[in-house]
Figure 1 (tube, rainbow, N blue to C red):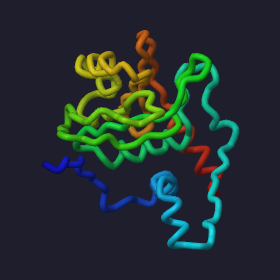
Figure 2: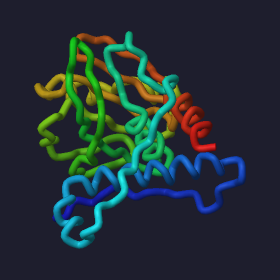
Figure 3: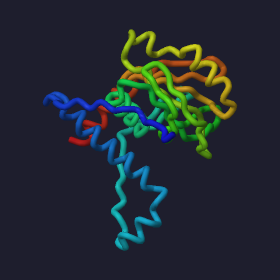
Figure 4: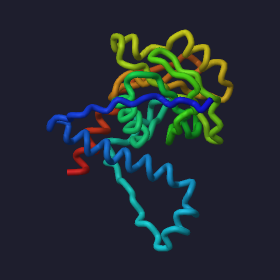
Length: 206
């Protein structure tokens, strides 16, 4: 049976006050497309002999991750979390996180959508992540409960995380500007840095 991916729900009428968010979402889509095309660069060159322009985004210093935290997530990944949480709100999805551990800190620099076999609003079954630079998973808790409950690991979350010998971090997306990371030693923290990243990026785009 072909895996069934989660349905997406996209609002049909975005008000003017979300105009800035639309710009950010558009930029996030561009980043995801650029990342997805990286593995097919040779084919792209064959189709387009002229080299494509080098598209880079320079983030303001204030957007740099806090050096004290044991889990560092890049701004691009944070914006991806926000976009997916905002528009996939009827079922759970799972992301295979990419990055590395350096000097006791987990650096999350990218993600791929896991091969999801079955998904409901309260759980998701997926194939093991095969990323070479895999550091853990992220999944969403759709907005069907209080924010405090959304930002907590369920018993199934804890069991899945501790049974995954390769996973260094478990991330739960519990809002379009909030997530919680959990380490194997029990340390965890709710982070609301996505909103800060969004504000600074909006300033940079003006």
